[in-house]
Amino acid sequence: MTPRHVFSALRRPLAAGLALWALTALVPLSEARADEEEEDTRLFPHAGNARLLSSDEAAPIKHLTIGLQRTALPLALGIAVDTSLLADIATAANVGVRWGAEWGIHRFVIGGRYTWFLGGETLSGAINEQVPEIQRVDVNFSGPSVYALYGIVLGRFLVQGEVRHYIYQNTVTTATGAVVFNIIGNLSAVGELGVRFSEGMPLRGAFGLRYGGPTLGVSLGLAYVDVVEPLLPYNEGRVPFLPAFDLSLTF
Image (cartoon, rainbow, N blue to C red; front, side, top):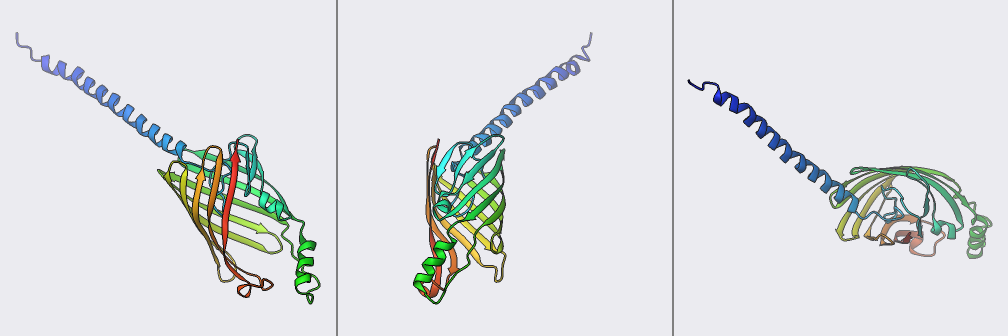
């Protein structure tokens, strides 16, 4: 007897075994890569109050946060109500609603805010004391604003873009891009660059450091604003830079 079909019969279980081995080797590898990507994304140090230096961070607000630039209370489904304590102190009472979500490496944010400027009379009186010729200054920062952000986490980097529209005494639209580089632990370097869609297309930007710990959040940098106010008795009323600072506690 000549076993003509022995090898062909052996080839089938051998091929099936090799295919099964390849699948069992590839599936854990793909799962490991997915787990590694998810772990890198989860460990990226987002700030508790979702602020960078002078602009928002593309990240959801998950916990109660008390901060200078933003104090927020999360509700459900990524929605949070917030206010800026710095603006409140500057007699610009404000309240906002914000929705944020993270899907893998992607970040999405949509929000809105309404501001009531309560310091018009005080500001007008202060200017009148400095310059008696000016009897009254009509300044109004009251009105709504809306904004949207998209960001993507690429390892140690967060790259994002923001569009914001204000309807105050003047209608203003701005677009700002930002890059956050996680240096080590919860410490990151932040760079922002944006433009205001108005005559001359003036630029704005900021650069500095941010510590985004699970409880404490601190940011410190320098913002380029290039504000011109003729009533200021300094540098012919031109203010090119302002400090960018924030302090927050997340619970």
